[in-house]
Image (tube, rainbow, N blue to C red):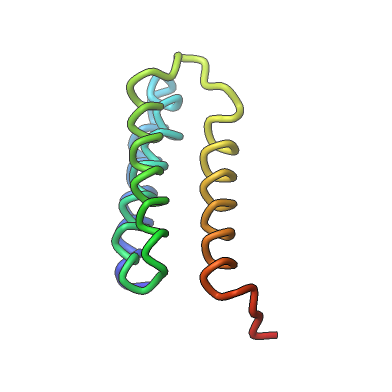
Length: 103
């Protein structure tokens, strides 16, 4: 958690700073994806190797959102990015653990 906490704090600070001006609110999904991706890369030593690629994917998609997303942010920009990323992460974890459960 200590390696991931800085990205959570940075995301919170960016949210507060960018949300103060309505014109910057559409940038939040991209900024969140970049910061979260950096956090995933930071904790990669404690997770399966392929999860690092998911982190890089978050950074790239977040960068694309920041660069090319229109002013009117589509609804998928948060749900699609994070839903897709979490789904891929879950599939990687299931594959690498053989579907075993602690329960």
